[in-house]
Length: 106
Image 1 (spheres, one colour):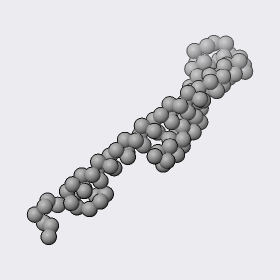
Image 2: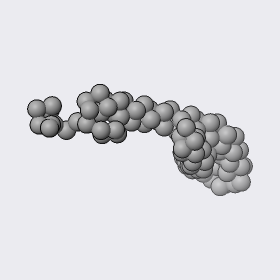
Image 3: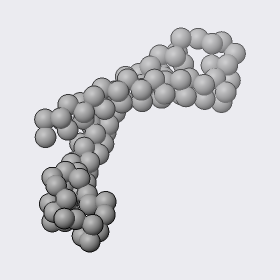
Image 4: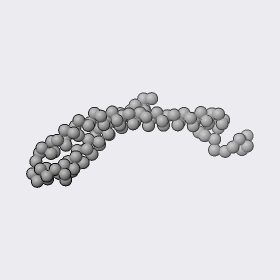
């Protein structure tokens, strides 16, 4: 479970950087395209607004990507446990699934 949390923290930090950057540039581009005051003047007001929105989205982005990392990690652990359990039931060894039917075993 520790590896799942470390991976989830890594996902959260990556999302905390990536999502606000995407929001900043998309909001800045849309404001320059759609707002004639931003397009004509190119003033700092439009960039400041986009930066504020991006800054406000940093913590929710961390939470969203952290949650994604936890869910993905838990699913990966469940699949690995199911494969190991199926391998134990097949008698092919621990951690691997049986590749051949029972007739080929000694």
